[in-house]
Image 1: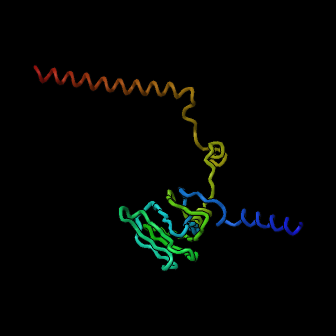
Image 2: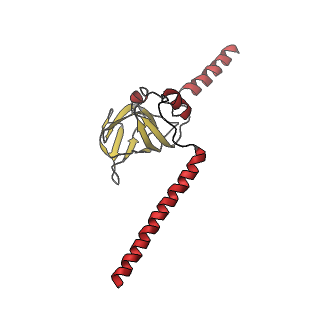
Length: 189
């Protein structure tokens, strides 16, 4: 009885932790981290379409006898993949697209299949990790700046300044209109 219980618990843990047996989305949009390979699950006999954000210049496939790759034909941003046999082995696919390199690990799987993968954005996780977060809060900016600047206007006076400025612009526009009328009167004489 206890052996059977341990067996069931082990099977549940195995199924829940193994990524190839976990359910994947058949149609997905991905943000692609260029520093890590993207896993694509494929069922033999079915196709997968991968949409790239740029034109594909070329691709390199690990095991060429099991997987077939076709770029296009309608668009150079689309790639179609097929796995032909049930005995297919996992392989990798490297795609060059503009100046970016995309790496995929292709896993044959009888339970999960990804029909369509659209890469909506790509970033390099190696450089993203090196970036520092900078606070954009005005409170934090005021703490870091020296108080050698003078206050020009406060919110109460800005309204008056704005009204004065608007009236100056309107006054100048009216002056130009009067000038044009005077010129046109002078020409018609």
